[in-house]
Image (cartoon, rainbow over all chains, first blue to last red; front, side, top):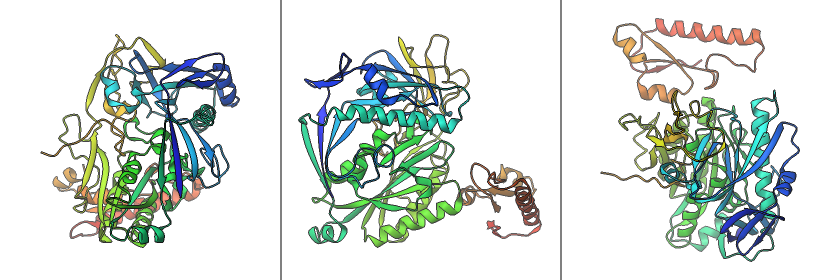
Length: 428
Length: 77
């Protein structure tokens, strides 16, 4: 499976008379965008605002971040099973609008939504402060249920990204990248001397608004299975997560998974990156056992020499992570886990809820309990009224001057467990 | 809490969905619970069936308290 990814670097986003891309500037006709995303009976009102890097803007509560993309050649469309038909994606050509994102905000759905500051110390913790954000603020109709609210806002975000992506279809990309994964036997024959490496991609599926969708399937209902890595680049995996902002994978991260990017970088040179195994993080112990058994089974079946496992979220998924690690190691396959830590504000507590001696190669993306003070911002998109109750916030987080004292847990993407972050860790 | 109460000389049963975590933290008597969002019940069942499930769980725990253990023990069905 081979995908050409054409990157179009956008320098600025402005509202204008018509929606178009001209001289690397995205012009958006607000009415056109609202017409494309509107119409859901569960939503009372939708507005769109822009937030540029460096502006004194705070966006909260953030639900999802999505990169506009469009399928130019090859089967299927963006977000298969969600917006497009369920054709298998990941071949042909796709265009991506870089440096911009659709961000969904508006009244809180659950209690685990995030903050994106476009400037100041908070901006340093979120990779999304560097993007021109098209913020869709959707307010729910009265009396709707939480899961209807979540589904409605999720779909509005995806539609906005799809709508904007369409305008990239006929633009000549600034850069074209090629990603190719051959069928397993061909790949092994092609690179007989390279170690075979796979990626175990754990998806948050705890239910109760903590869900992820694969080709439209609620991933808590899957057993571990295989994807070509390029399928993720066409939006095969979509976030439906109201989980702690710092270490959930927004849809943007699924589209731009940096572990996949980095493995491709070394593919055919240092390693043979043979594919992705997706698995879930369910709330029944039998599911955790079954999924980790199947993950280990698949790694052995593929004849892997090494595996990278990334986690999403924290707490009981730490057990899924450790089970995956232990069972894959027991197959004689070298395993590295990628996670983050909840080690208390002083960093002195146990970092993960579960542990095993086999987890002897760990990459951490930071301690989510670290406290930060976010200075007041001139403009708030959404509302700061929920700051005291989001995960990472506490009674008194929002101060009278508009500044916020929170754990970095509340910052979208701060300790993302695919390494899509600025924080790193160092051994002493 | 499990360990501190036991330190005071009172046996404890830890009802826990994620048994491996209970094993990691060092509980001696572990009874597996139903699921993380509803450890002691199951909203998918009819009220009558759920009550039976809950009663069975409590009885299992009480029985576990009466059993001498040597080291960490998980009381499966």
